[in-house]
Length: 233
Image 1: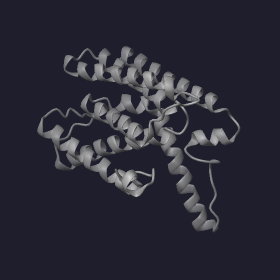
Image 2 (image 1 turned 120 degrees about the horizontal axis):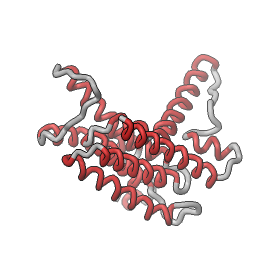
Image 3 (image 1 turned 90 degrees about the horizontal axis):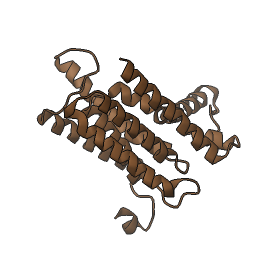
Image 4 (image 1 turned 60 degrees about the horizontal axis):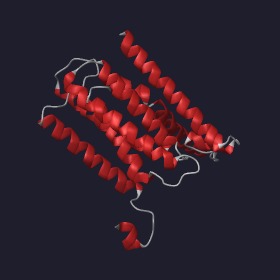
């Protein structure tokens, strides 16, 4: 609606996106708490108000962080969609291996989302015919965060989301390093040729398809590692 009204294709700006993400995350936390379906455990037992506040802050960070992390990864044809397909498949398998009937619905949801991503990938791979855009990437990342919280899969999701996390930290490091060098050396310098890091490799002359393929393989390694650890322990 904004694009039509303003005759541009810019959509929402960064501030508007973050505000909406925050509202959705906060609404989710309160609804989950009121419905008593919040089973979030990070391995530390405490019933203090401060601890509960910290847990809610962590849940907020997971949802908003993963949403933006997937969005940052969506820079090359098929990269974000392929990684999401692998991540959801791994998360669904890990939940299934727990043999907890109360969580089985989240496993089915993960497998369904993985299949949806694979179907989309047929037309999103290089050269892409259709794109996720913010609507798709922000949504997929947020859903990953929701399932992580509701299925109590914090550590698993972090491991499976390794590519998304690396992409996000490459942006944080790039911006921080540039600002620090500009302040103390009076000239901003860059750690990478461009961030997120997939653009760094692209500017290094590596083919787009090769970068995407390598990132997929790394994500698959994360997935197998999580499954093996789940079976072992």
